[in-house]
Length: 339
Ligand code: SAM
Image 1: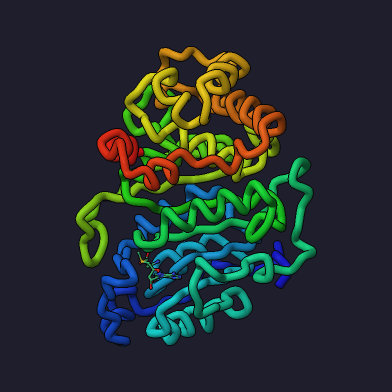
Image 2: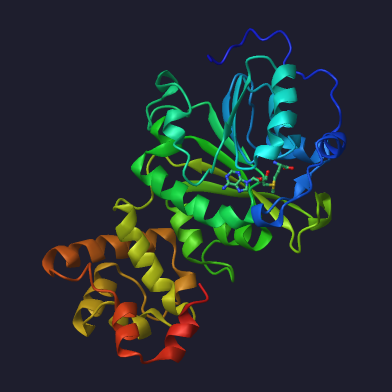
């Protein structure tokens, strides 16, 4: 459906409350599907406001459940809302909502981890990546069990301009466990600085919008929740393939509490290559991984790419596998796995 500026009114007519929908359809929360519902429309409206104006927008909502956030997205003026929900029990409640917003709500019953979002919207909505921001948003109160693998998958898709990013620079407004939200947005020197911070920030402008206390959800999860907004950058801060960046970042953070000079020889196969990489990237060897900026990771990725071109076999070398095979240094490895 075309995003239309002609919608007379995009506010929904009076409907049963979300609590009533839950009772009416007996929608008991399923723990395996990380179901924690938001019933407070003020809160769902606040999440939706973080996306910016949705008037006339195309939107994909992940896991609509009983439909609280879905109502807020429709009330904000989305012209075309595609919801992807794994649990079929929610279909009748969403059907009710679809009837209240004729032609504006489409439903897919499926798994967001495998759903082909590049087929979810018409090709004609696409915009050139560098030139213009597309009016396509992904919004979701994500299931905890899915949120980290999903954002990693979407970061790779962002880098390759596939999936939701086949249309252009699609913006994301998503919830995460508070600790994950902090890692996604942590800057250099922060205690939360991690692999996820660098992988996210080299591709996106990222904003930790606000925290929702666990008590706002039904049932109440053990943790608080952070709302995070992602805007893909027109030019990624690192100009190397995603897999290469991922390898460098993963290896550097393997020993997050050590100085760079202490662990580089281990990940780089040979001492002289490690020294070369640090020198080429102009990285102070007395810094810890958590202190490195995205620009420094970019310099390391460029240096690593050059060294791989000159040293066949370097890219496929995986020091962890070698250690596993040798079955030694368990302590050092365990220490590194906290990133
Ligand atoms: N949006 C609703 C709200 O805010 O009240 C529900 C949020 S609840 C945290 C997560 C929702 O995602 C549930 O409806 C759950 O069934 C759905 N879900 C879980 N895993 C999913 C998956 N792999 N793909 C699509 N939906 C999923």
